[in-house]
Amino acid sequence: MPLLTFILMTPMAAGMLCLVAPSRRIMAGLGVAAFAVTLGLAVVLLRQVLVCGVVTEGREFLSADALSIWMVLLISVVSLATSLNAGRYFQRDLAAGTITPGRVREFYVLTPLFGAGMFLVVLANNLGVMWAAVEATALSSVLLVALYNRRTSLEAAWKYVILGSLGLALALLGTVFVYAAACKNNPQPLPSFNWSHLMSVARQLDPHLLKLAFVFAFIGYGTKAGLAPMHTWLPDAHSEAPSPTSAMLSGVSLKIALYALIRFHILTTACLNSDFSRHVLLGFGLFSMFLAAPFILVQKNLKRMLAYSSLEHVGLICAGIALNTPATIFGALLHMGYHALTKPVLFFAAGNIHQTFHTLEFRRIGPGVGKILPATGIAMSMAGIAAMGMPPFGLFLSEVTIIGGALATHQTAAGVLILVALLASFCGILQQLSRIIPGMPKNLQDSKRPGTDTALAMTLLLGVLLVFSLWLPAPVCGLIQDASRIIGGRP
Image (spheres, rainbow, N blue to C red):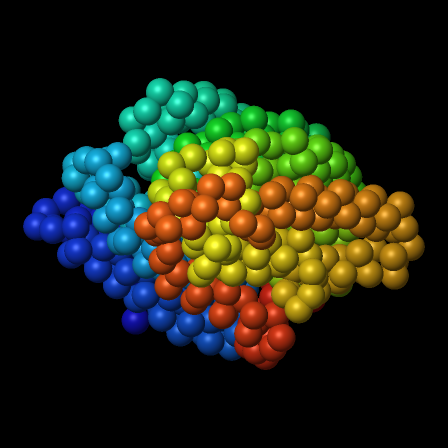
């Protein structure tokens, strides 16, 4: 059974069917069904990868190892939750007249294609195909950012296009330099531009060209991942996109770019046998964490605050990988998964708040969200506690694992800096959410306003997050350990 092909084709087929679907409910059902199927296929594929190590198809055109399957699982879960949330979300927007039926159809066509592009990024064995897939995700997501066709959303989409295109152009140059590094000392045509082949001849690649390739790839894919200082598109895009799209952008799209960056880091480390790429990842990861904290504290817009929180978490993942110990890499991958489950809940809750209060400004929302929207208030409180890194949620475990791994290997300065940055972001998120969730509404009439308090997708994600925080199944734990060994270059 060609599982990898089916994982790619299922959301693509759903997107195409949405072009001709006669009603919004059928389109919503197609999206849910497509990502439920991909999640089931990913679980089947997980078992094969744990047994075989690597699964390939199409003469190794598609390839899945432990790192790839970890990403496929995250994409499937977040996309499924987004599809579940989108149905009621756009029903309310249509009733309020803030969006047209044509734009809703555009969402249901583009979102499965966005998901299929992300699947191709992590399953493509060829560097060029991976770059093209990242470009495809950028093109589909920028149209989703501009979905509401407001001046501010068009401005955010334009900034996303400009910075994203520039970044991906640099990533393409990095890809070209990898090809040059492979061909320089070999007069014969390169037999394959696949990751698997390049890793087998990594020591034969030209180290100077490969170092240059990593720099270009880092800037390019780092822009798409939202690493500072290339992050300036991120708060605008996240705040202007529909909340289901914001959930996908923050939950998995940023991590897809990180995945591409990690692949270049693995190849560079194997070739240079040095800490060059590690130092770059660590420096920019810590810089992103420290930059995020003050911006979280001063934000006036709820979704922009959540976007800067994503910047902090992306920086932490980069720092954990850069510290290059089994514990820190394991913690970084674990953090990637827990964050993918947590951040969509916050964006879904922000969508409910926006549709109820018709604003995302903290000042205009005011206190008392928990009174007006009780389910949303509870879900946002729990997800906020998780995002701050508090027990019993898994982000606490992953952060402690990264810091503990750094201290255990005498990388004390990095561990202390990570801890300080996490504490600063903790204070910022706590201060901002405490402005709107607890307390009584300013106007008693507000407590009687009709709310948009839908919580199905939020409840499912929080349930999965809590279960996996308290109990990590052996197959998932083994998968993350295998992925950690791939990144760390350990047998």
